Image (cartoon, rainbow, N blue to C red; front, side, top):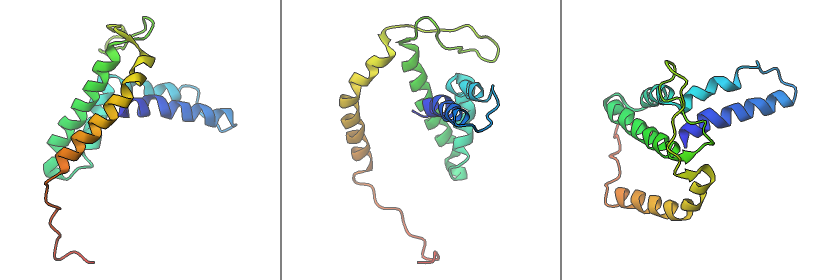
Amino acid sequence: MLPDLLARAAPIALQRLGARGLPVPPGLPAAFMPLHLPYGMVLCAYLLAQLAPERDRPRAFVAWGIGMALHLGLDLLQDHQGVGFALLFPWSWKGYEFPLYGSEDSVWALPLLLPLAALAARSRWRGRAPPERDPAAPD
């Protein structure tokens, strides 16, 4: 969901602020669009990985990258009425898509996918010992 939040929610919020009279530069909402493309996703994965402890950053970068690549892969299968995604941005604006289903059709999979995700998360965390507490840390 992160690419959609970054590239869609932020511009919508800026447009609403502009509609309420706050001065929003005209091109600013569109400046978030590259965050929904591979170039922007790699940049976001790198920046988010920097929030992890240093030893975990490579794994965090890979995890964020895989999640965003999966998001992009599913988006590429949606029918966007011929618009597609500029996969080679900033070097090309040519749009790509492989329309197998409509963008609204993914909502129907949600009732199945949410319980599966919860089950996967539960099984991943079950049986793990809680993190050891640092005896030098204050209570």
